[in-house]
Length: 308
Image (cartoon, rainbow, N blue to C red; front, side):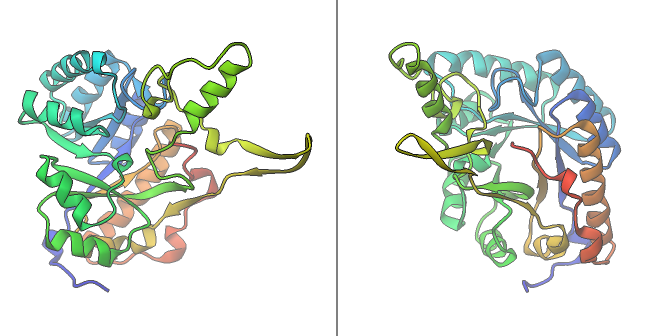
C-alpha cells in the first residue's frame, strides 16, 4: 500500500472517450470532467470513432458550456507532406478553445510545442511509456501529461510521481493486447498480403502507425488459422484481456494519478454513459472518504472495450 495523500488533494480528472457527438453528450451527462475525441483523417482507426471538424467545434462548445474540457487524439504518425496541414487544422481547433492534444509522434510533439506553446500536450499510450525514465524523457521534450497503461501497479505510479512533475493519466479501463499498444505492424502486413493477391505488393504509402492506408483493420481481433500441408489444424483468436481496475481506484488516487482514463471510442454512446457513470460514482465516493466495494466495481461483460 502506498502512502495516503490528504482527502482534499484527491482531485483526479475523469476522462471519457467520445467517438461521436452523442457519446460526448452521454459522457458529460454521466459526470466526465473531460472527453477525448479523434478528428477525421488524423486519428488511428479511420472513420471509426472520429469527429468531423464541425462536430469537434460543437463538442468543444458543449464542454466549455458545462465547465468541462476536450482533448483531441492525433495519435497517428503523419507523412512529412501532411504535417503542415495537420498543424494548421490543430491551430484552428486551438482557436475554438481545444484544451489539449494527444500525440503519438515525437516530431509532431516538437512542432506543436513550437507552433502552439500554450497548448497542453499529452503523450499517447502508444508511445509506450512504462517507467520513470520514460516519463522523464517525455517531460523533457515538453509534454504536459503522459498516458500509462492500466496494468502498472500503484507503487509504480507513486515512484513516478515522486520524481516527476508531469501529469499522469492512467488507462484504468482498457484492453491489454498481445502487441504493445501503438506499436503494431499487423495492418501493414495485411495490406501487403491483400494487395499481392492481385498485383505485386506496393511501397508502404504511409507510416506503420497508419497501416499504410490510415486505418487499423483490427487484425489482432480476427481468428487466425494454423495450416499444415494446406489443411487447417487449429484456429485461434490472439490473446487479449479486459482491464477494469475500478476496485483499486483508491490506491491509484493515493499514488497520485492525475487523470483516470477510460478507453473505448468504439463503444456506443449508451455504453460510454454507463461506464462513465460507474467510474464517476466510484471516484466521488473515494473523494468523500469512502471505498469502492469489489462486487459493485465488477463491470458487466457488455461494457468491455471492443477494440480501441
